[in-house]
Length: 431
View 1 (cartoon, rainbow, N blue to C red):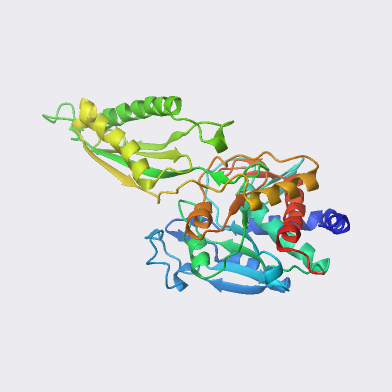
View 2 (view 1 turned 90 degrees about the vertical axis):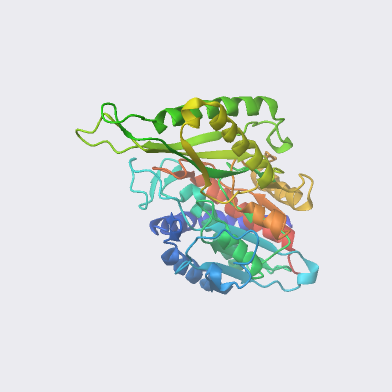
């Protein structure tokens, strides 16, 4: 890419910094919460579609189940309701596709409901110091805004690209989703390379971790001490399982070699996210409940299959259930709450990774950190199903999925520059 064009992009972005933030703030104000199996993305997606049309993109709006092949696909996760939950895909046609490659920016518009509390209303954005607060600011409406503004930058500078440039906003990525992303691929919105601006702290990630959420249910024998012949408390069993899982996590991380993309940040977390047992009522505090449940998230490196994940985790839990009396006395049920989200990767030396890394260096004046993203996401759909090489590159921030979520303002500006420059480099600029 010519230095004059790079300078023009940087100048345009600098002049439109406030509009990048305003677009992010507008997106935050839409409470596009994923309430699996339902979701409230419609209003936000209508706005995104209008924004794309204003950029003269060819806009395709469709709900995932409009795609005939979706429900029959092996990766489809059943049980979701897509009523009034549209995907939005905008395409800027290249002037000479044979002379350049196509590029896709993929973002999700849904957010997690998160915890209550915090200083700020989650859907009323606030700028404070160098941060922009609001639900989805970091995950990932700031990234979505940066992709849209990068497209606008190229349009207003009159840059003609050889290859197609596609920008999409999908539904139902959170809560173990990915059907929205899969539907867009089956619809035909594919490219030679993809960038997903998930919040990975300005790291160029050619891969990401995977995992699954499970629910463990124990059923005991309820009653009160003076009124039942045989009481079995599921709480004791659940407590033993929690301790066993903590020990298993430590052992697994000692014996599992770190994946090359995570050599500097090794470890496979196993997080107990919820434990419930009984409903205390005045006057019934001495009653043993019948049921207890635990929810846990188990993480995996790229390359681990669903079958391997199941054998490791469920095999361990079943062993504990057999060998631990407090658990063995209960009926146990282990249920998947989300799909298995496989970790995925592309080679570090892939041409697309090199292109994004080079543009990053040229834009920010320093080489990027190249390592895996420490979370599960929908990128496996690109890498493993659609055969589209995908790089994760998103902003720094914090408190995603929780109160007072925030994103670094300077990163949204930097990403807009990087995305616009990458489009020129990858798609090719027409003479």
